[in-house]
Length: 195
Image (cartoon, rainbow, N blue to C red; front, side):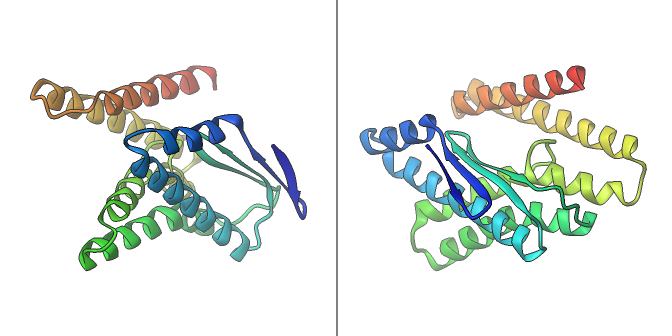
């Protein structure tokens, strides 16, 4: 489904609707719904900060992987780009911590904490990796910034794989987390060799 909001094209893929349907029919539907709400909140915070800094939004796409924002050609300072990247995960962490401390909406608090922390990982495609790269580009040359971002991305992937492999051996791990970490690593390798 595609439509326009002003000059911004909004698209919602079939996979997003499939995820909504899944969330209504599974036993763990509450967590899936809370994850969707948290992800939508996360992307809305990015959108708000882009607009606050006079950035232009070309398109917004929602799929089972979350939201993807394509921006216009206006370039912002490295500091503004870093703030845009960090705004959503920090908001998730603040909401999660606040709700957890108040001891209300515990599942929503935990989902916000997980999504916020996960997005702060210094992995190249995540908010933390983008913010790190923006902040480095103003202080070191672009090649060094790219190399640091790639190195930290590999360290993150291998750390998650090792940690979850250990937890799986101890019967406390999650196979989906291990698969996600492996996909992140494969994606990083593909980007490295195709770029």
